[in-house]
Image (cartoon, rainbow, N blue to C red):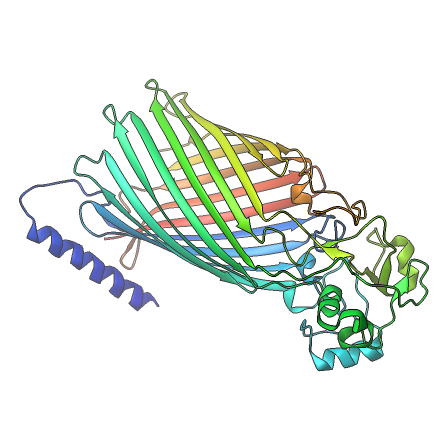
Amino acid sequence: MKNTLIALVTLISLTGFAQEKDNPTTFKKRVLENTEVDFFISYYKQDGTHSAVGGGIGSEKLTDIASNIILAVPINDDDVLTIDVGISTYTSASSSNINPYNATGASSSGGYDDKVSNEKAATNSPYGTPWLASSGASASDQLASVSANYSHSSDSRNTIWNADVSFSNEYDYTSIGFGGGFTKLFNEKNTEISMKVNAYLDQWRPIYPTELHEYDTYGSGFQNNGFFSGVPILDQNGVKSTAYSPSAFTSYSNSNRNSYSASIAFSQILTKKIQLSIFMDVLKQEGLLATPYQRVYFADKANYYIGQSQYIPVYETAANVGVYQLADDKERLPSSRFKVPIGARLNFYINEYVVARTYYRYYEDDWGIKAHTVSIELPIKISSKFTAYPLYRYYTQTASNYFAPYEQHLSTEKYYTSDYDLSKFGSNQYGAGFTYTDIFTQAKIFILGLKSIDLRLNHYERRDGLSANIASMGFKFVIE
């Protein structure tokens, strides 16, 4: 792969050199002097007690490792091509419970129609719990993505336009994006106006909770077929019952999700020490906006379970290690959503060692959510090469019109979700970063000169009990 990368960079660089040689009449400072390569890796770990897959309760343990390689290549004096390739791998206790009935080996492959799994289910009395991870196929997944951006700057460097395309794919979701932007600088580059538009055309491959999938496949006779063949269903008292029927469930006829956005930003250097930026975005989403595998439980419907009856009384606590409640329906949300964030950044130069970067954003959408975000970052110059920057971020939002906790929705409602991302909550994020910068790239690795190293550590806490830790590290190299 290294040889291929070197060959690609060399070819593009030679192309740029040839173009310059054909036009030797004027000298212009290149927008990007040399090809740059960024390597980025991050580790994310979270835990909580409000799994959306479990209808608002259960473990939210998740770990994610992501890495990116970003290659920025000067095509000529004015044009830069940037390619970003990334892969993310996660394991999730919550999503593993799309099919939670694996504790005894039933459905161990995670497949809905696996004959061996069904035979085991019939004889081994499967059980699960929203508080522990299942061993199903949905316990882990990978997201792969690639994007390309082409930018062109005018001779004066006061006009910049760019175009981009992107593609990403994971087990049940594919996204294709494209867009473009325009930036204009005025007043000796003290004033800047930029505009950008993007569109993402996405495709779900819907995966439903096991019990809803089997009901959709076999209809009213689902308890005698497939996974449920020979598997006892228990009522609230732990007594075997055949009354369970998730009749509210219907599968999705449309699996597309399209997103469109337009943004405008204005930046002004007010004084030698103060810079102000104001921005506004308009976003519209259409199509399948609900998540197909997130369960909902109704307050006005009887409860039914698979597993060990002695755990039914403690179902809503981590003491439950042996029973899982069958869903009344999947999450249902409107097929359109309109979002408007508007905000500002104010950067203030305090002295040669400290700069204050402040940020505020107000957000509102037509699902009933209103939110405020405030953050401050204080880059502190320790030496000519080292900078530290503590960070604090506060966020608060109101609940969506369609949210209610576990077993508080009614079956008569048109839309419903127990996803706590749509609930009322506040959050705090604390962090610190450290940057090493060497503009002369004295450290070398083969043909790569090390330009900077960036390390960030963050801790996130949400008032609903979700907490997370994030660590990331980036390396910027120059190909000389």
